[in-house]
Length: 257
Image 1 (tube, rainbow, N blue to C red):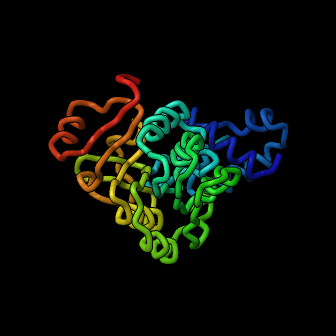
Image 2: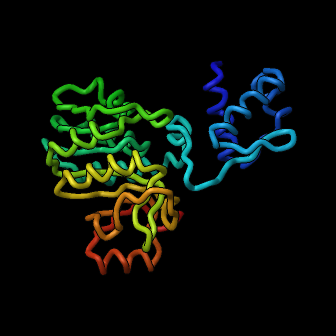
């Protein structure tokens, strides 16, 4: 097992249990305790974990985000429900923009039954997922590769997106708040997603129930600036009242968690 694979598995364990113990990880991965300490040192320097005596705890600072390969294993059921809902919205031969989220990967998987689509994306993982699809036009934004996110960012990516006008832009986020709007982990991601929203007729936020009520570091847009919110679980009454007041359509997969 590569060191990066082991660290990602440690992060997954931290996500589930909020803390890890060096001796337990040493036995689990069949490596020395010193190797585990080096792994935890690396995660601590990256700001993803906080070392403690004999182990580490998860850094739950909302300004941070986990690597793509860790995030893709979160709430898989919810992402599939969202993907199925959006799959029913996208028509044959439409032009869509999808962001570099793990939810976007589930969405394009659900759309593979379409014979013809044009997909514009900054996501390396989406490009890989669609690499075996024929009859589609797949457009990569270009830009600078963002470590751990498997996405392209920067002015080149934003300029490329701005040169198109798509039927739908579908983005995810790290937080949705009634007052603070739609937010993400950092400015580079937010800027690309802002360009995506500006370049589409219909602006869709696809986010599971765990994102509601969260506020991350960088604002993407005000919540009232989107046309539709697609989620896995029916939001509470306050949210549904807000959506009705602002004319935002809300689609959800089920009534309760």
